Image 1 (tube, rainbow, N blue to C red):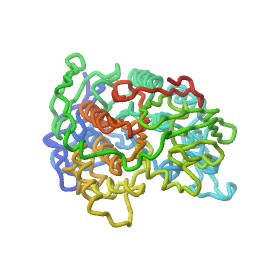
Image 2 (cartoon, one colour):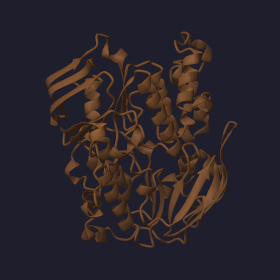
Image 3 (cartoon, helix red, strand yellow):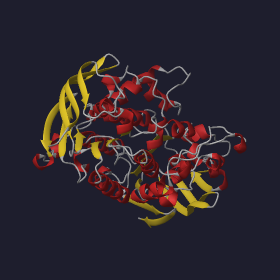
Image 4 (cartoon, rainbow, N blue to C red):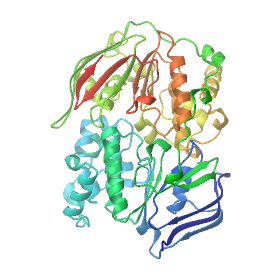
Amino acid sequence: MSMIQIALENVFVKKYDTTVLSGINWEINSGEHWAVIGPNGSGKTTLLDILAGKWPVSKGKLHYGFTEPVRETIEFVPNDYSFNRIVNAGAEYYQQRFHAYEAERAPTVRAILTDQLKPVGTVNENSVHLEPSKVDHAQLEKVSTLLSITHLLDHPFVTLSNGETRRMLLAKSLLKHPKILLLDNPFSGLDVHSREVLRNALSELSQSGVMIVIGTIATEIPSCITHVLEMNHGNIEKLAPISDFKITNQTPEAFPQPDPQKLEHFGEPNFSDFETAIDLRNIKVKYNEDQILKDINWTIKKGEKWALSGANGSGKSTLLSIITADNPQRFANDYDLFDKKRGGAGASIWDIKQKIGHVSPELHLYFPKNTTVFKTIASGFFDATGIFFKKLTEIQIERVHEVAELLHVHPLIEKDFSQLSKGEQRLVLLARALVKNPPLLILDEPCQGLDTVSIEYFKSVVDSVCKTPERTLIYVSHYLNEIPSCVTRFLKLEKGEVLENR
């Protein structure tokens, strides 16, 4: 007979004076593995927070069917780094992973997984005494093999790709031997191989007796799942065994389309006086003995729309960091931006960024959360991260509202960024990238965390704003269905080298 492990009875949850979950009744029994699905803002992450004891119930009852402490039984793996104090402190600022000197002093993956971490800022290594690790070699080897990160153990963690970092943090959670594993959108940002690694790992864990509860999208439900819970507007819409669950395919006509008048008003880019947006010549980037990029040549003419692809760790983000002026090794390389060598004589990093609208997983992870949606979008004018001291013009204020409406985030305009769901935050950062109407858009996995309707809508916005031959696009995604139809050129990287250019 199966035992109830977790039960929620008529649970209501408030966040920041807003009711986000209403009347939740749900039982999780031993032997069951659940997928929690639903659109952006439906309450999936909050529901996982409740199960993990990370957020209080404002009304109703939450029961646990085990006597051990919750923190020793349940392990919650969020979809950002905020839960890991050391990792979060080590990733103090957005460009850090691209600085060689930071990589040299950053802890290795092995040190993080075995809790052999010296305090951030330690100068004298001999001044810190560490207790022996409680993680034995066999445990580390088993989990590292399970998640295919054995070859990364002695790498500084700040040099890992987004997907590699996610696998490292999952490994950290597994080394705690949880009985119940909660995962929030774990497939987000993973390439085809990494997704397969994760699916296999979850299958093996479920067979070993670990209970799996995963917040995900309907098309990424792993084979180990036995039941599905579907959320909508903070309510449970459906509870069903996986055998009764069917993905409802929405027809293209059902997807909202951008308002033609608003798009027309969006206008041509503010700067278009160039013929070649990017001309990279034999680009090389190296950290210690690791050659990240090897002789990359890439020319992008004004108005071209490119997809950049490659596995996690292939060098995509590092290549983009050269273009966006975030990588110090740009000074040792030969390239032109907007027809001028390295952006032009005397051109500052801000001069370059003014011509680029940029979204990336790292920007999302490290973006300050304690600022309003309005200020978050407006910060795109100054390439600041949410806080700025320049007074906005009337035209800029109008532009913020216009772009917010275009991406359907205007109702959130006065809310704090931290109060939004991850999917809503992603749309706000997309609005931030578009607000200054740049000639070059670099959208690095922009649809991470978006539901199907939001992805289709965003693609239609990108297609619309990129109709003009004056706009250039670089679009990164591991999913073919996320690439907008305006893309006609493709560059693929493999282990830091160009595998395909067409």
